[in-house]
Image (tube, rainbow, N blue to C red; front, side, top):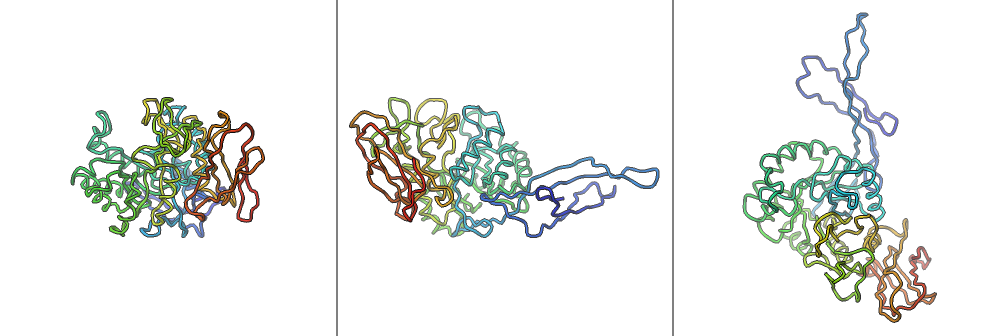
Length: 467
């Protein structure tokens, strides 16, 4: 039986005789004009399956008894992955505005907590995120259920290594024996989630770069996934940082859905050479930043400093990543054929403390306590619509030495912003795709005690937000 909230929309019954109990039983249900699932409207239905037994009755009748039952969330959506037009969901083009997420919950540790994850998903939703990549692990059951409910497309990722190890005690020790069982469990469990977009069979896998064995394993894993997902509810992909080299390209040519880790500069060339590939940024950005820490001036790139922190002003970047959040956003905008991108990362996570030797990463747009960094609002400005949710954000804080030159930055999803100091305007600037490539307005101002204020205006000049 399929339910939409509390009412039945489809039902079927099959009678099974004892002679038929050894094989599979197939049933077909038809839902007329279903509401489509999407990130903007995550419409869910409940599929209830029950096994009933008719016990013998001395009077010749019988009362069916439910001996087993299963309730699943399902949804209806049409997904087309087009090499030239990107993602088409339910007939409409949609750019993936995604984040990569490690399994841990930051300050709460690695043990799973559904309430904590729901809160994190709400923060990402407010940022404008519509897609998640489970980097680099098969997700918890509750992760997929929340993605269904709250409206996130998911790239569900299985492995961070295959046969060639990255560390002495990683999964490569078990890969030959356990990969088939783990893939079967993963795919059979999650194949009916409406949030599922792609099966990722690997991230930055050295096997795909080293030799032809990588292509053999790619084919083998693809076959394992298809055994569990014969209806192809999701396509298969690999996220790779080796896409500049031949062997990795041969693996990409097998899956056809090519994920690039920090390879935006290759998109246009590869799109021309491989017109049948669907290209997207499986991992982008990797700008490092500490909440509330600002290293001046903005134009000076400062990766490491004596304070053991990274500047959230927008001038701390690693060699392989984007120069700034704005650069990551613009690179994606300039390739309309790509599906979109998954920035590294939504939240800071335990481990990988680039560039310092601390306990956690600096890559997130929110820290391990789930407080927003300024970059959170830069993505929010690019990924949300001022017509429905106008926003504006100003940084840094306003408390410095008298006369010190401060880079004041303002981001907004509105087309124009104004900066004021103690009620006196310091000028207006136009923002957004319609006005070129400026996503964040910047002023250099000598510090003076008082109030600094930012105002956002729509295209008619009406004030719609202040900060």
